[in-house]
Length: 336
Image (cartoon, rainbow, N blue to C red; front, side):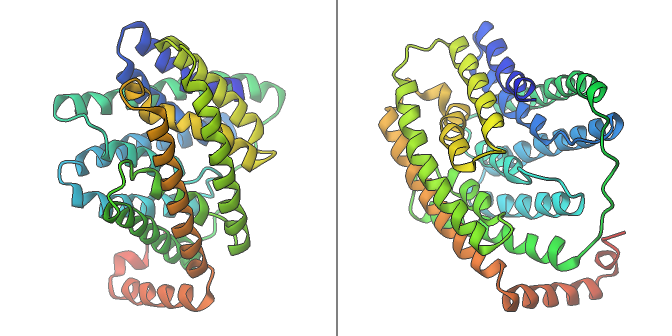
């Protein structure tokens, strides 16, 4: 599986480098992240889930690109995306990484320098990366299911507080984190909501606190790894091979030690978002910006997690949303 995931993220970059279209390859690599949502079920359900996630990835990037036309729109758009993907992932019991990569994709799109026809082309390249990832997932699944049969579908139960109320709180926290980043005029604010969401998705406040420490510590070490990699004389194809190697290592480690996986997630995500401009921007500037964004996002995420896991706040939000659901009948039938 780590090898298949590495191919899904690295092959688009190599193809883009071959045709001297690095930006296109990086956009395709972002779409390749959809492979990580492949469930361990039967083949038909695997493909249905992955194609639905591919649509969500493309839609998230498209909405992010559109929100960049008028920058104040970015905050409510990212917050709404965070709410929507969290609701869907919780209702359908989608495991980690949950809504993280959808929000990350939307955030990268929102701060992409592409405009007009170039922006539309970027959406197409993300879609092509998703398509390649689905194809790789199909071939991988044919091999994997020969060795081990897929699990049956997990029965779903609808809990309004868990699926709706907590998702609204999570989306609000993502929007607040981005608003704080914009108020502070950070150069690359898109990493703040991503870090916030990564922390607040924890199952408990204690887990959120531990995850914050792991993420900050892993980011610090990961930035040192990125500095070493940035010193290498990498060609465009070399960047693609490096992305494949990092993805392989991450998928091998993430189920064993999250903090150690973050060490390699940090250079991977920097390369995905910044590889096209690393030659023009000093590596030190990128590192400082990423560290500040991560710390700020984690702090907001832990504060939001404290609210999320407070019975008083969670029950209050759930009660108010419940009254809205009762007023509008179509929301009352949402779980159906």
